[in-house]
Image 1 (spheres, rainbow, N blue to C red):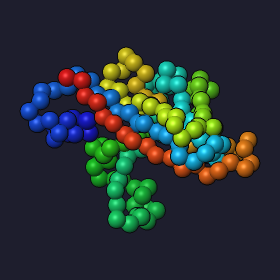
Image 2: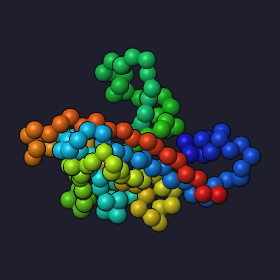
Image 3: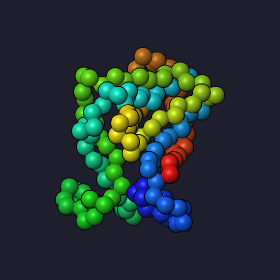
Length: 146
């Protein structure tokens, strides 16, 4: 995907040496939020962890047999990773984010010598029974290093 986006956006440029995809995330609702964002310390997640989860854009939800069957083009589809519980992972969450606070997280780095991704998720936090529904926004960015 990174190569295709780069070639389309910068047809005259040469190849890039590194690619980073990131996300800028912030809450709009006042704290505490009912479903805060949790981030894993990328240094605690192994390169061999994560199950690919392919993205398919469809006009209608397919039947169960189609969803669980072979998907043509799956090897070329955009994927994210699904992570199973691992006690070695270190997780952090922000239950009281203010409107003027943001999180910048990296969800892909082609340089595997660095922490290459930060698994993240939202979860229902029962420690605040009167928490407000979380309202938030995410802005994704892609950086190429030539």
